Image (tube, rainbow, N blue to C red; front, side, top):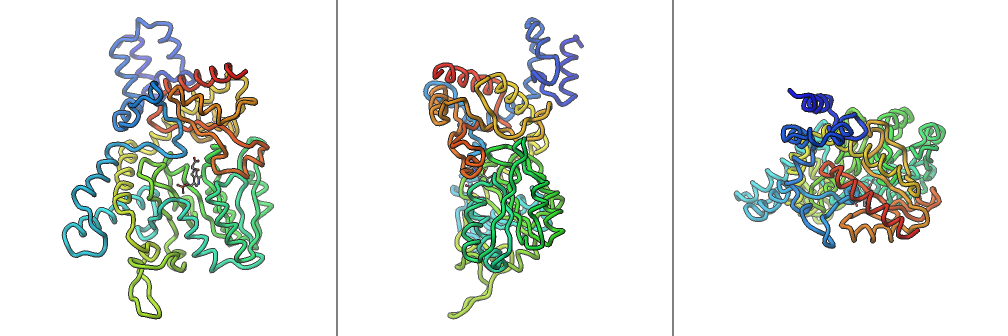
Length: 457
Ligand code: C6P
């Protein structure tokens, strides 16, 4: 084997992206020796890039926006959907559209099998102990409201305490504000460390036997920090408090094991993990879900109905009133198959490589201030997103200008207004990656960002 090919082989077997500029000396070596880039080497490089394998699965990414190739860096808001998911959704409507759990006819049986089969996939994906622990919801927001209204209203009293953090998404703030107003429970907030992370030491000073609930985001959609959820559960449980984990930004990007985490509830949205909008889920420990009263009443969630009272269906259907989002649930199952076939560990590793590169590039722009912790040298220790400000430049203007270059990023408060207030800023720009993004896309984004900053300064 010739020396450069051997070098690429070594990089591949060491799990590093061969072109990764931070991880090994190979890129410079190759860049200085273009003549050595044989087709054999290029094939090896392409095989190691996750994007090169999966990109063709996402037809939306092949389009041009404003005359430029689309560079989609708004994955924390919603991910794109692969063909396997679109096909599963379409197959349901084209081939076996029928209501679930109701008809004895063939189509209804097929739809029911696929709908319930997808539940098995969700349960396995997060290592739930039982499929009955998975309740379909429209999204994570609905799942949190379900817990707030069902468990919160029947378990919280005046003087009880709920611990949240200042980095929570509005979906994990507003429902608890509403429940606190109704019950007289008191909200307490964990603040940030100097590195913009969850302050575990302060959390330990807030928690007491008055604490009935700790409801915390796993990965912040704005700071990108990864919170120590296992430790939080351990501490909360030692005080007899329940724990809800908002896993919207973690389930799509890393291996999740609810039994190892030992959370009481966990919520996520399908649309951030390659599935359609309109489907999400609540995980809850079986005994806890059994004790909780229904949230919505209606068809599907009953055992027997009399004129003046009803008995309820067993789990999980007790919490699934009315005709559900059948095609969307089936497509969520297809999304889980798709992600699992790639492997969540590989997705996470690929995103870590991209994160290291993104941060290295952004750090070279003096005007940029990034919020949240820095990644370590392997791109680990935070999520694959960067929320930032660029001097006096308004994030809204920034994202409008980048859009002219085909680059889609988000600007605003990202539904974390209290966090922005805490940080003394009104808004940030946010670039968020997924496994189908490439180094080249980061280069285009950073170039467009630099040009925009130069233009306005
Ligand atoms: N964050 C973002 O651009 P829903 O809307 O229910 O699917 O997800 C709500 C939600 C809850 N928690 C976290 C941590 C989230 O990131 C989100 C959604 C999007 O950051 C839309 S605001």
